[in-house]
Image (cartoon, rainbow, N blue to C red; front, side, top):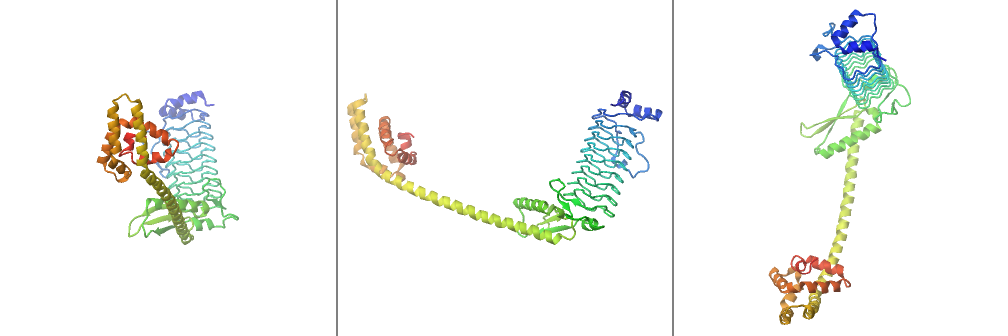
Length: 459
């Protein structure tokens, strides 16, 4: 547990703390397990241009003095420790995730098994410190001094380590997936067992590397060992990965967004099948007559082979797409043909029923008229006269048999004449066709409903 007195003094601020340290040089502060989440101990109005381990003069001599302090198991998440002096500090199992340590001094410190996810240590001096099995994923170590630092077994996925000094560092069994090592100096570094899948290596300096094997493992399970059945010979790692070659593929027919998606799919497939190639899709160059795509490789002697492999995969996908399109087209044509046969059959039935409709219609009108005569409370003479008008209107009956081409004015005339018969006719009509072909009749009257049946008979 943290010493309560030390913790209380620290919370008083940088000035008070530093004065106490100056007056009590023989006391080693004990801040073990202290909860310092979000504490603000960094210098104010700092400038990134002032920071950097290369500077001989400390631009911030009055920054918080935490050298040799025991902060093991302490919680410093989101803390501001910009330019802090943590030389010789013990931070084993500490939590410094998302902490700000721009330009911090961490030489000869112990930060093993700690959580430094997304920590900012840019331009920091971490010389000869121990970060064994530490979570440094998404960390910003750009321009930092990591010379002779032990990072073995640590997680550096998606970490930014550009323009950093990693000379003689220990990166054995580190996970460097998607990390950025561009322009960093790794001379004399230990690389055995590191996972370099999809890491950016342009301009990195590698000489006198100590490496028996590495991994290019997308699944991050450290399974795809390179070389598979042997160790690298002396200097072999440098020969293979010193330079990061690029290849270009030109698309004479142009490239669409769909084409870009296919290209990404092909790249991912090759990455999974051949992780040792380190294939990376960079960009599309639209300059010139035809667009070009650029890829990076790890291996300097595999460019032509990989280019042919990409082209073959693209051609195979195009052939598969063409075959699929043909199958789909044939299926659609077959479905349309079958649908056309069904439609033609239904039209023949409808045509026959339409031709027979006037005769049936007249018969049901007779029955409806009789029912009106028997049951209606209106004048019998008027009903008989209306029935006679319907029977005598042979032109209207003939027009009904040709509903497809009938004249709207003629139908409106029939509708007006039959309006008063609607309730009785509907009842008789439905009773008749419920047992003799309701489905066909409804299809017929649905087809002519706009002109006649929909308004007269209902659905």
